[in-house]
Length: 343
Image (cartoon, rainbow, N blue to C red; front, side):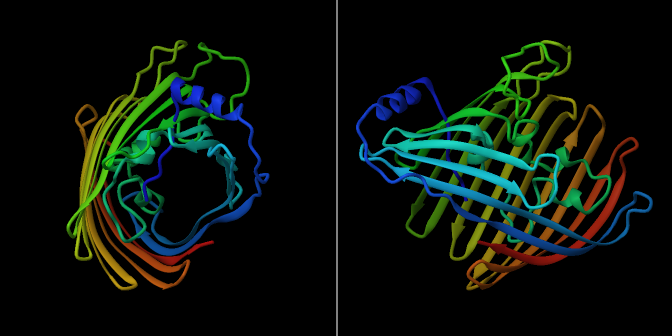
């Protein structure tokens, strides 16, 4: 599902004007939701001593609430708590206001390019955001990420974002990140060894013609510049497309990550999903190339989901990755199954 959020000076002005109006509404009440995915799998890799069975968890508790004022503006809050002990225990937290002007988001939420881009479709755990690297040792996540690279370094950094209303199927989003470092609440510092003034812009299109659905996206992210170092100034450009008909979804995505510490990487992928009743199955392929480092990787996934009931799914993926390059050769395989719960 594609979510939409962001901010501009015009949107801020609309927000400030709206909050000055008389409004009578109920206070925000917080609700609890989230997800818990529990996996059991077996993996093999060329990396020594990294074969065997593993059990892994991906879970998060989400606290949300909103209220709509008499003037028509909706204000809300979202706080996401990692369900396991983590160095970033609360990763994403933000407030938002929405209305006829669109939506404004303030806080640690992913950028417009990450939220609005379409990746390679999958009925399994997923292929092109680095999920296979959680199981197969030695895999370069950046090589096999056609959308995941948009969240590189700034995923939960404090930012301001604005999203327009969807008009004739089109929606535009923009994001501005003053400081890429997360959880920085001191005075601005443009010489602290981290990047500043990152920004992103994205547009997507969604529509249905007769029985054919179409969704397309284009996005660009500049991850800012570090005044205290002569390091790279990374940028990211990506495109995505999905078509749906009679239970089939076919899609692909393309990504260029340039001037990054990880290198100049070109990634692209395609996938197809077939859904019938409670079951879905998919096949996907992603390739990444870093000409500067002389490294490339091919990733394959066969995935499936079966809905046992509301909020209860069986999910599984079979991965194969072949990576070649100086000191980075990997030939790996993983088979994972699990249960995905949403609440």
